[in-house]
Length: 147
Length: 105
Image 1: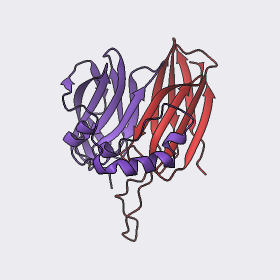
Image 2: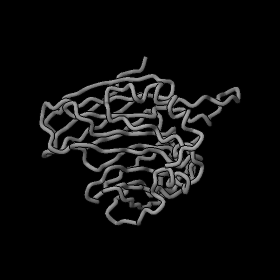
Image 3: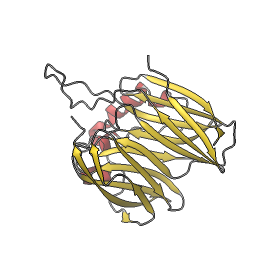
């Protein structure tokens, strides 16, 4: 993880609310990752630069989405001990859309609707047993949804 | 004040399928209003779910999540009547917590 000069801002964000939530497990928001403008930086912020391609990650998303403002993305990981799933829309202005950490009885399953500016690969990055795996699926966008 | 979330928690086998609809503008900070001014970013950055008091889902979101977010969580080993609590916090420090009981699917 490389936060550099943003550490102060992270602390401010934490003080502003993240750490005050009733769930003790709340993670610190990955500011560096969410503000990355490129896929490589976003992946690096997750510590996943060496992620291996995996067929055990199943991404379900429309082949063609008419409305880029609402693109349903479902990711199922069949990798044992999956700890987190991140969703990256590679050509969005800020590619990293969401990171979900699982604990206790949660299934390694993520579903969320995201905005996509243009046709692009959607990349899922899975952390399991401290190792990283990824998979991609292309989604064609007819009308972009970032405006 | 934020509107209540709509949460559906249905048990299928021993897995509870939790689906949540949140009322939130999820402004990206890139949209312009009718006068051409940028609308400030306003989005949920943190979403947590607990099952009978134990954390199960800790989501970090960006402004790329759609307006009025819909998301889902699956919880293994759940039973009818289990308590599921969903909370969000946005970048203006608005927050909202709602809870439901798991129902038979």
